[in-house]
Each structure stands twice: as C-alpha cells, then as structure tokens.
Length: 93
Image (tube, rainbow, N blue to C red; front, side):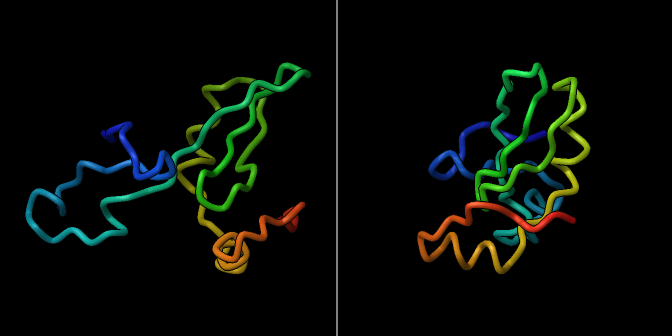
C-alpha cells in the first residue's frame, strides 16, 4: 500500500516491512508516481514523474499497473533531467 502524498508530487512514500523495522533506505521509501493521460484515440498512457518517459500506452487503464511496477528510470535520462534538459524522445526498447 502506498500513500498519495509525495515529495513535489513526484514520489510517493511506501509502507513496507523494512520501514517498520527501521531498515528502510530512501530507495525503499520512495518510488515515482505515474500520472495517467487519456489520449484522443481512447488509449491510456502512463508517464513517469521522475524521468518523464511514457511507461506504457494501453487500451484499458487497468492494464497500466504491471508496466508501472516494472519501470526503471534510465540513468542517462535522469542525468539529462537533472540538467533541465528533458529529451524530446526516448530510445525504443
């Protein structure tokens, strides 16, 4: 379960066993949030709030959970974002 209150709306805190036991690190407590966009063609897109990548584009919004849980931000893209240079496009996997 996670809380919706995030740091600048980009991260959400996680309730985890590690946090309760005092063994949590910043990475186990925070994860990106994924705003959803409803596209003109009826599909739904999930956007990573950290690296701004489109994580998935699917027909049904309920199909976004799996790609969101597997998303890992590309370190090269994170560096560009930290320099206020958001890429116009992302390499296709």
